[in-house]
Image (tube, rainbow, N blue to C red; front, top):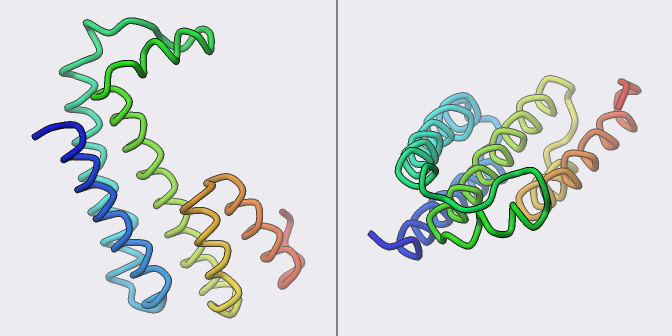
Length: 140
């Protein structure tokens, strides 16, 4: 498996998960198992394997932006970073759907938040929190 092959596989699985969140929000097997447990766990295993295999010989680190750039010159570590993003954004999207269901926020209002969480992570979370505040008065 090449980094590009694994990249394509995790991206494809991620897209399926986000579609499930958008079209089947009331199916607990989607929000409680697939998108908040099974797929993030699979991504955690892939991430851990990549880190274990490539970290020791890596250049760079996290002290400066230049160090991060050097670290991500290794395509396998860049892929690990990407999987990290995918896993955590998916966990946040799953939480948004579950929380909206509990707060009785109409799902059609949540779908744009899901899109922005998928594409831009923290921006989507902020949009959801703003929607939640506007609909329920709960603190952002």
